[in-house]
Amino acid sequence: MSIWNRISDALSALASGESLSEVFEKLRATPERSVAFTIAVIALGAKMAKADGQVTRDEVTAFREVFQINKEDEIQAARVFDLARQDVAGFETYAERIANMFDEHDGRICFLMEGLFHIAMADGEYHPKEDDFLARVADIFGMDEMMFRSLRTRFVPDTTPNPYDVLGVTTDTPMDEVRKKWRNLVRDMHPDRVIARGLPQEAVKLAETRLVAINQAWEEIRSLKQPEPA
Image 1 (tube, rainbow, N blue to C red):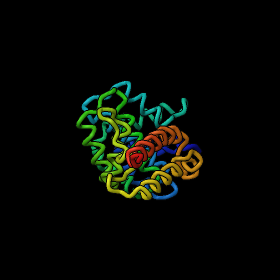
Image 2 (tube, helix red, strand yellow):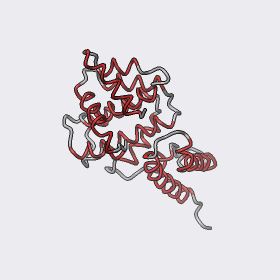
Image 3 (cartoon, rainbow, N blue to C red):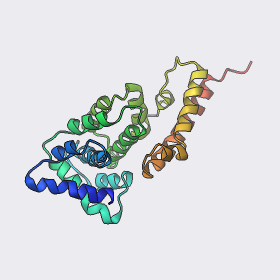
């Protein structure tokens, strides 16, 4: 049985008056954990899309780009999306439940944040309410401020990216540590490692984009730290 069939079965409980968040709560235990996570991801994406007060077609399209959904599964995904928008449970409820399922070092957390940034920027504008939404979600996930700034720097093109923020270091970080951080990030973003961590195929595209930004940041820092010729 596919995950979407299992989600369909889970949603049948809504006929008895249960809310989407109540259904999610029942699915948190193994082996339905993946179903719960998928529902929570869609719920956060839906609430992200309406954070600025409106849901645009671009944002819905961006959601489908990030969380690639097969044609035959679109009806079920759309149902979860619409239910999440109508659910009285706030986005913090879903974020807290995801945080309880995975820690901040789990690759799925970073991928989810990247996907939410992608949705936020789909209409070409980064609204202050979207920034508040993402900052709060990151805080609930246990993501440190430096990592959050790194993500925002790469996705929000309103300022020149700070290479130190991209790598998650400071101007005072010794070059050998900067180099080590850069190498670790490059290794972690390799497509084979992304797939090996159990992340979905669509995460590879985001990882490749992140890898470009990571390498550009390293080259910029290296040029800034290069000693002047005698």
